[in-house]
Amino acid sequence: MAALPEILPDLLDALRAARHVAVLTGSGISAESGVPTFRDAQTGLWAKYRPEELATPEAFRRNPRLVWEWYEWRRGLVAKAAPNPGHLALAELERRVPRFTLITQNVDGLHQQAGSRNVIELHGNLRRTKCFDESRVVDTWPATDDVPPRCPRCGGLLRPDVVWFGEALPQSALAAAIEAAQTCDLFFAIGTSALVQPAASLPFQAIQRGAMTVEINADATPLTPRVTHALRGSAGEVLPALLKALTPYPLS
Ligand code: APR
Image (tube, rainbow, N blue to C red):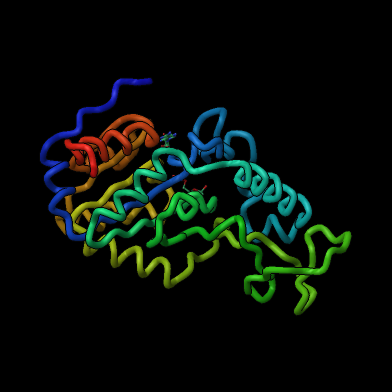
């Protein structure tokens, strides 16, 4: 286990006094659950696959079977994954803070599985399926040999309910995320390369509003020089350590 970064008293004080904590997570928080990240060299999905061939509406029109099967493979990975101590620590933190907003770029649903309640999914969820033409979630469809399967309503192709490159984010989710970043007094960015917009602009909204900002990440990112505290390490180790430091005495 790598040495844990020092957790400074002013961060603990701010966390104890916080009225509203907002958190942005990326694929790094699910890495320790066996879900691949996107941009980590070698292990990242985009190191092996070309996003323009798999994660755009154009790619789906060109080859719907390829795209559907690739997401089926990712669904299989996620179905086997369990929340790790990082997810669980955030669910616990939510129970200790008056207002807690968890904004995730992840489509794996592991935060909700860990018990997090106030979760904003910016990029959708792999476990949901929707009609490509009607853009409406479809829960069940007749079992046929069609790959991708067909929408029971209009006969259109079904697709995963995730946001592809070039597509707009769900407006209500984005508005709620911006509101949280602008009203929180403590903002965490965890396990994200902070490269993909508009999610990557959220920490800067919090910085502009004078919130204390904390990055927990295995590597440096464009955000690192701008945050109040940059804690280098793995989320599954740093977050439980933060919780432990917050509770200097055993909980009854
Ligand atoms: N703990 C903390 N950080 C980690 C860990 C870990 N165990 N493992 C990896 N990281 C860090 C990496 O150093 C990297 O900075 O997590 C970050 C993951 O970055 P990306 O792979 O770029 O993933 P993310 O930021 O979530 O990508 C944003 O891009 O491809 C799209 O829609 C997709 O939601 C995704 C978006």
